Length: 144
Image 1 (tube, rainbow, N blue to C red):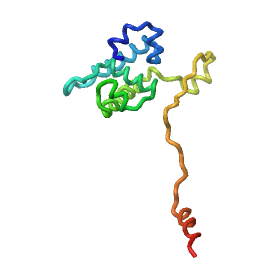
Image 2 (tube, helix red, strand yellow; image 1 turned 180 degrees about the vertical axis):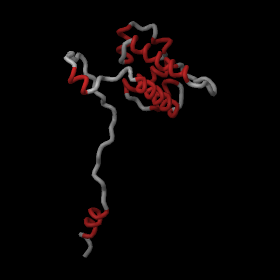
Image 3 (cartoon, one colour; image 1 turned 45 degrees about the vertical axis):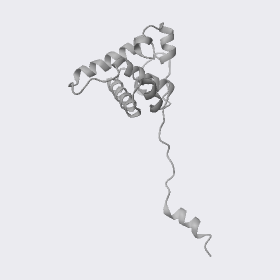
Image 4 (cartoon, rainbow, N blue to C red; image 1 turned 90 degrees about the vertical axis):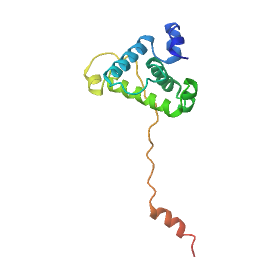
């Protein structure tokens, strides 16, 4: 669903579909547009508007679909979808507006925490290193 269609949704439906409130989405778009104004304009304009780029990123976060599927649903290639999503993620994370307070702040404050957000994205798994000696020993046992 493109932004032109999504802006006609009720606020509750928008949150159910994209996972954020409409006001939060608009704040995200403002941050992305502010960063784009600071950039030097070079090249042709993009095929997808800033609003749709933020929606594409929210769709990736919400549904965790592959870049191939997101690219097909938005009419761009897989590599373009990947590039757009990574660019929007970088801009939003560098803005430091949508971050949680650190441990020190939480320990020092007496504020009651109403919501906890848990990041469940993929992370590398530590695997044991394969060393040559353990694999050779197993092979030598069968030799007479």
